Length: 124
Image 1 (cartoon, rainbow, N blue to C red):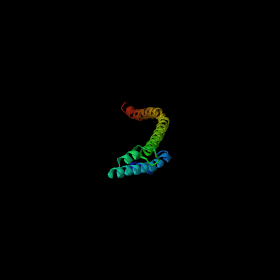
Image 2 (image 1 turned 90 degrees about the vertical axis):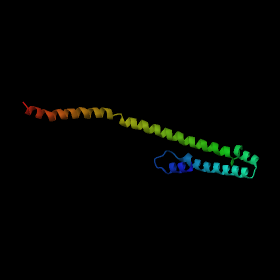
Image 3 (image 1 turned 60 degrees about the vertical axis):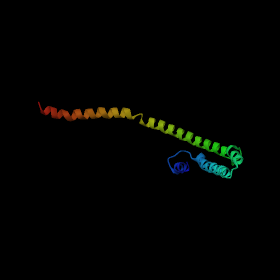
Image 4 (image 1 turned 45 degrees about the vertical axis):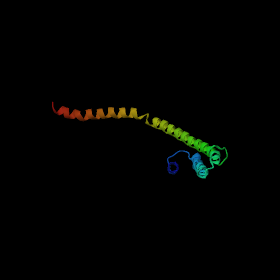
């Protein structure tokens, strides 16, 4: 997850990243809580591990995960919003290509007819 987040943050074409910088810190906080849980479980202190996993303190796993999840969801929403804007912009830009393509086709057909006419008249 860290690799993907770092790769995304390094891209120049990605959307607003302000919430995702916080996600990087929250991911680290969540990993530290996971390490604490594993350390407690290694020594057999399951009650303390459960408290870290389910607790509501700032350094516990659940709040860190919830905040990380919210930050990632905000990033997804921003990406979706930017993608929709890009699609609408492309649609506006490309809306005239149908008419332009039709006009070019008619022009090309006219040019072909003008080019063939002198050759056809040679056969008379």
